[in-house]
Amino acid sequence: MGGPGGAIGIPLDRLNLTDAQRDQVKGVVDSHEAELRTLGEKTMTARRALEQAVTADTIDEGAIRAKAADVASVESDMAVARARVHADVLQVLTSDQRAKLKELQAEMEKRAATRRPPQR
Image (cartoon, rainbow, N blue to C red; front, top):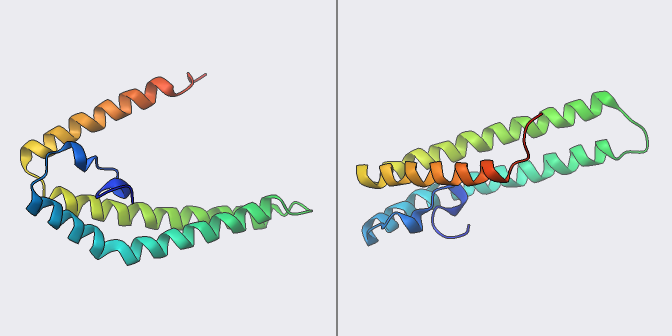
């Protein structure tokens, strides 16, 4: 998972969590672990099926579109599940930690934007 919170996109190591908060976050993440694992497996399966449809000997546009829709569906489920974990973790943070998180997220977005190629 890349450390507590890594899978949910929260840089917890930079928020000065107390030991009690770390335990709470671990509990939140652990409580969603089975769901996230199952969705991760479904995502990999759907992506493999799409890749097989794309690289088949003959083009079957209907099959490719159906497999792409399957990928989109499972990724939507994963996004919602991650949002629930994120929301649960936010409840553990103090208002100061949530403000610091917003600052860190803005910094990460700014760095990511500078690495993106310009839009045409």
